[in-house]
Length: 213
Image (cartoon, rainbow, N blue to C red; front, side):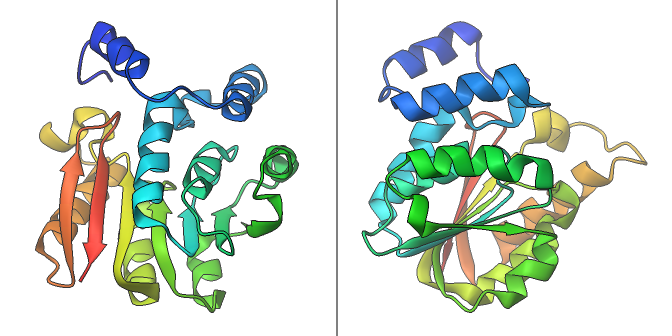
């Protein structure tokens, strides 16, 4: 769903930082070979993730939902020199695809892939994070949030993707639409949780920036 016209979206991309060459290649190959390529963050959102990471300068980053690794590489652009990015996904068939691009980047040795359910993996990570990006199954957003808040340093940032869910968050809720139901609860939780402060940005399908107090 386009929240602004395609013409304006094109203008925005043309007046934002260009897509790095490696990410352009990853973008292209994802569309050529991988199912559901629209899940890719893409040029504009990728530059937003990169800019936010550069402003935050995180030491340790956690990503929930790797897909083909595009967002992970964008987040690495702002990572401290001795930092690490841990990324979790359940799709075994994408691990080698991700690793190919991770290893072509400057951060290959700093990116740790975790294969499995994020709910099981997160408690095993003995780290404090400065930046977390949630972009996985919407039904578990609330569960992920509660698991990661204690693992984030004070002042750390949680980025949550797809929080507008193609506009369904302002439409009548369908009885069997669990994803929208959970996202409505999630957005409300972030806005009311005294442990954090939140702003919801209308970027692509909605991106929430949440700061841990």
